[in-house]
Length: 394
Image (tube, rainbow, N blue to C red; front, side):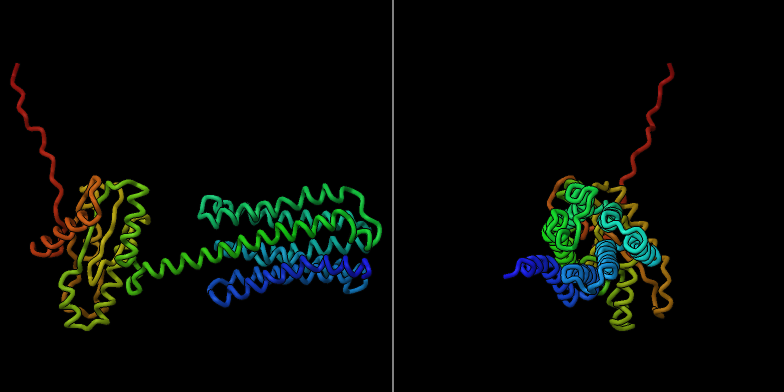
C-alpha cells in the first residue's frame, strides 16, 4: 500500500475518534434535553473532526484557502468546547467576544499566508490562541477544583489540555517550519499534535461525559428526595440530609417541627386544591426564611421540619418564632379562606442522642402547642434568674 495512503488513513483516526464523542454528546442530550451545553460540546467535537479532515485530505485543494477554512473551523470548535464547558456551570462568554476571536484569528491566518507567508507564525497563532481560550475557561471554572470528584477531574483535565498547547508547540516545532505539505505531515509537530489530541482530547471528552452523568445522577437523587408539591425535601430526603449534617457537624443540634393549624378544616371547607396552595405557600416561607444550609422537609401531610445543626434550644426557639410570625403575617386573602392561616411549632435539642429520639421529643412539644391553643412555639426557653443576692453592709 502506498505510504501516503497509510499516513492519511492513520491521520484520520483522531478526527474519527473525536467524531464518536460528538455522537456520544448528542445521544446524551437526547436522554437529558435540559442540558443544551451538550449540543455545544457535540458541535465542538464535530467541527474539530471536520477541520482536521479538511486539513488531512487537503480539501479545498488550494493551500491558502485550506489554511483559512481549516483554521476557522478549528477556532469555532475550540470556542464551542469552551462555551459548552462554561455553560454547564452557568457561565457564558459574550457572543461578540467569540465572534471577534474567530475574525481575529482568521485575519491573522490570512495575513501570514497572503501578505507575509509564515507557517511558523500561523502555527503559533493557532496553538497559542486555542490554548489561551481554553486556559481562560479553566480559570473561570477554578471553583470546580473544590467541588465534587467529577467537577475536580473536569477542571484539572481542562487545565492540562489548555496548558499543553504551549510546551508541545515550542518543543516540537521550535522556530523552523518543515518545507512542504508532506514534510509537515511527517513532522514531529504534527505527530505530537495527533497524539495529544487523541490522549488529552479524549480525556477531556470523557471528563465532560462523566460530569454530565454525575449531573444527571444528582438530578435524579434530588427528584427522589424532593416533595413534588412543596419543593422542599420529602421525609426520605430530609432524614438523609440530617444524617449528612450529623456526620459533618456532629450530633449537637436542634429540630423544629411545625404543623399547619386546622388544616383539615381548610381542606373540608375549600377543597384539596386550595389546601395544596396553602402548603406550597407555607413551605416557601419556611424555605426562604431559613438559613440556606438548614434542611427543610415535609414529613407528611401538613407537617414540616427544619434541622438546625449546632443550634441551642434558645436559637431554635427564636428561629421557630420567626417562622411562625412570618406565616401569621402572610396574606392568604387571594384564596378566600374563612380563617387565617397559622402554624404551631415544637422544638427539641440534643447533644448527641439518636435522630428518632430528637424527632419524638419535638413532635411531642408540637402536640402540646396544639393542645395549648395553636399558633405558638413550645417549649419556651427557660429564662435565667437575675442575680438578686443582697449585699450586707460592712
